[in-house]
Amino acid sequence: MVDREALLSSFVAGPEGAEHIRRHPDLSASHVEVAREMLDRAHRLLRMLLGAQVDAVRAPSVFLYSSVEQLVSAACVNRATRGYYDGAIHVAAERDLSESLLHEYSHHVLNQLGVRKPMWLHEGIAMLVARETWWQDPRLGLHDWLPEGHLPFEALVDAFPHTADELFAGAVYYQSIAMVFFIRVRGARPDLGALVEQLARGEVSPRSAFAYAAGREGRALHEAFRDYVHILPVASLPGAPPEGRGEGKGRWSSGSGGD
Image (cartoon, rainbow, N blue to C red; front, side, top):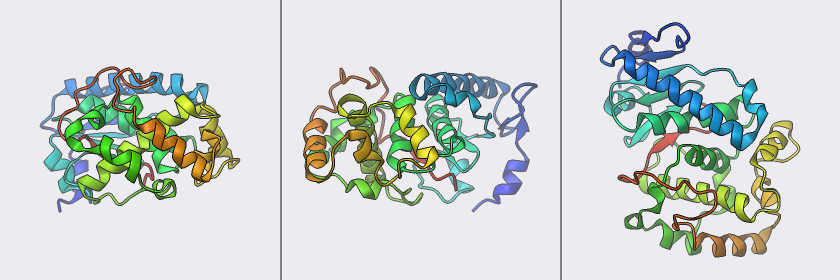
């Protein structure tokens, strides 16, 4: 593994107003400008989704790597990872930079607001903000799996290992965004901003958050979720991103824990 600290020390800080964004010397200053624009966009989107509480969040440190290989070489993450959050945002600039920044900034905001768990809320919000649609690809088989074989809801509270294989990671991300959509469309308490505030204040526990927002428990919750996810791949789904590249097998971010 590459010496991470030595690598990061070689990164170049952005210009005035963007000093918190650092790039590998192989990248041009234009990458910093793209990053600044995407962070601003992410902030606006999250403010729309979660409310004015987002304005209290300070700007994150951002490290732009020249390639996925360079990113992975300096961190213990899945080799399909394009970005991760560990208190700072680390992303590879060679592919889907904008999407990765939108995704990882969502983790930053939730952590800064005092919400480290549940993981499904982190990943579902991050995928929604980044307008990810790879999970709609029928070749992945996720739509056939989720209605009958979804993971236990409690299994998506804690962050899964950053080195998890792609198949398991895909299932986790897909179910996470399904749970967020379910709350927004059929939940008894669809306001994600209010849920984040209640989690931050300790009024709702990460383990009970899904049942609380859904307004259902036990078998009733499982049956309602199972019935709902049959429609998830439909592009006109309320609250779903209307467009997206849908390339490959998605974007594996490590992220909600901030460790």
